[in-house]
Length: 234
Image (cartoon, rainbow, N blue to C red; front, side, top):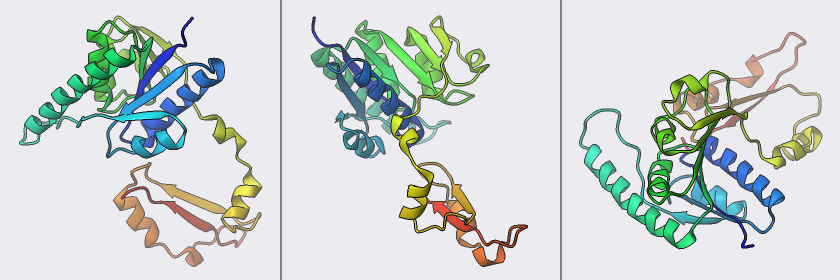
């Protein structure tokens, strides 16, 4: 019996990429011989995170569609068409047993191409309210996994919808609090405030945190907290 083959797509932000990596890593544990590949955009975080996790990555053309009619619509449609053709060629060559999408605009051409070729599609939605790509592509999927009760009401699809929760990478559970504090040179008893605006960052949050004076922030017990800003790309 030949090894199982899976194509995963999801990107733009680590909120889409890390669940895809968690799924891929679980498949690898369950089926060590499985051939697992990813596709995404060259400019997305997936082009860095996926190869770093040890998986094959292929860049395709894709761009998010604007929310309203604008001059960005036609370039976005051109990229979608080009990405769709790329995905058809890629899927015909790889012949995966299934395509797994975790959201983001890069999923659309992959799922559409897989559907056209008769390849089973499974989608995973991480948010309580699904993103536009997953809402649209759910109609072309055989199964949809959701992270929160009630999300199913936002999908118009005949696909089976299952509440699974959000996949978490195994490495997350291997973190040790004291080791992490030592690596950041933080005293074991000092309070820590972590501020973040997602993997891409949020400029307003970043500016607000950078404007804070940590010494002026005193907790009820008189301690001064260490403030850590996960700035992201912004």
